[in-house]
Image 1 (cartoon, rainbow, N blue to C red):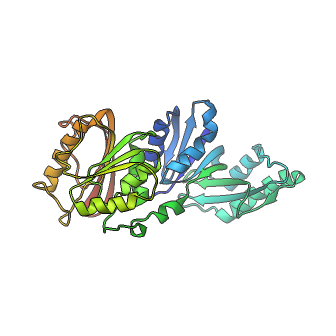
Image 2: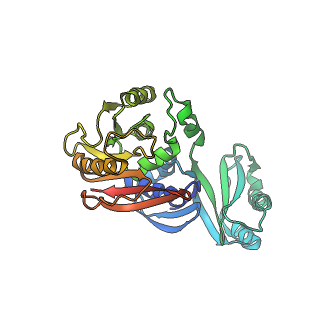
Image 3: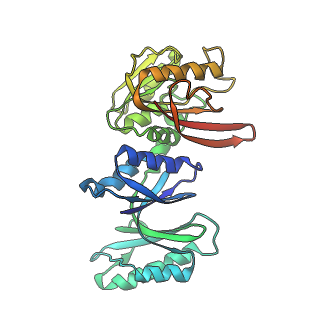
Length: 345
């Protein structure tokens, strides 16, 4: 099965990295066919019965993907090539069902999305009018989508879409306890997914703050543990976690001296404090990161994954016993670059 992931474009590498990490966590054998800005095409190699439910599983988990599309064809970026490919494709609408066609430009193109939608829709309608096919652009039975990149058109049927409204409803200021600078739920979910979390994994955030990362990990089936040095944050995180119906444990403690046994957690996802306004019990931000990294190595299982967000590169990764799998970077402004390091013990 050839799947296209229409990515959000909120980050240069994070959305694609999130998709690939989820595929690995679900143990779906695959290969990347094409990867470019806001579009990732994957060929699944597995032929398991569960493959039919894969799009729904992924859409319930992913944060930075808009749509998951079963690819029907990819062709040159020209109107004639697109219409010829649609005409050659076997696109059948079952008796009495409805369909809709939408197009999106990822790069600048002279093509009009409205015209492409109308022309593709006309071909599909003429071919299926004998079956009573009808156009419905609001809630069709079959949603077709054309992604117009810089050099090609990727066309297929939408199998699943992420519910962006859920992430909007969980924005930090809408939660029972709010603190400025809290991580957004979409970013928190993406960080959690980068760790390839599986159902039942024990996930630790040792700088849990208001509990945003813990909420997103718990919602995909993890058992979560949150630690923060400030009792007020622990109380606030409890308020934010209590209504979600999954098990959690919150502890007021020091990230550089964790009150946990050796190898007692499977995954660590954390966004430590940064900047002068952060409350730091260590000598400095640098020593906080360094000492916490060694503690993370002590409490995580062999082979466990860690995601750490920072505003500087971590020079102690190898020294602390980790291997860097991937480093995502994002330039916030001229003097600040944020790093998202994916590590493995």
